[in-house]
Image (tube, rainbow, N blue to C red):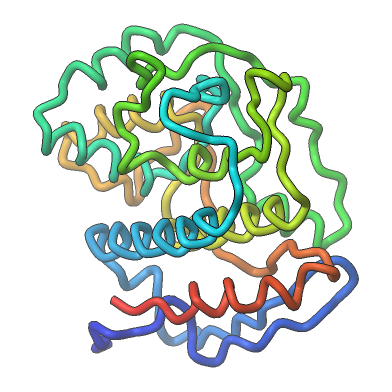
Length: 265
């Protein structure tokens, strides 16, 4: 099937948002005769999409009055969850800069306790849609500094994963003891996480350390992660079926969702 280089991130027949209880539902009417757009994309194209999604999110955060600034690393822990696509972006950054030190440091500290998620964001959304009970992951939290920090500064800032980008706060976390986000920003973060997972729906998610160690092994074999076994503590991503957006945020969220849907490569 020929695919235009200017094709849409999502199917053109994607419906407009409609309210259903507390969620926004998309109508994904994929033609079963063809793979979905994400399945047709090669890794370099997916990385380009990822960067464009990051750029749209940056436009949003630039409009906010945030306390976050360089050298503020209170939220930079070992608990960050990323997709394999985000891991590839970081891993490519290491290789492009001949940075073996960072991956070796991650391996060195890989024995330390860290958060392991049981669900991806789209897993969670699907369970909410079905009215199923979701597991409580709050008890699975541990603390500890991110191995990629140096002098309280992120060494991969330009390619940092979305979970790091979305750890924004209206107050100084160190002074207040925790971050403070307005409810709409929390909804925005969830939507972006769902789209990023959708782009990498054939990939996996897990703790940053686990993903990067896994990639270091797999990339060394020339494996692009397709069709291989999912390692311990790594979970399969899912395509987007619904968006978790509260009714009071729907109208304000629509332009953001439109801007993501209008991405072209």
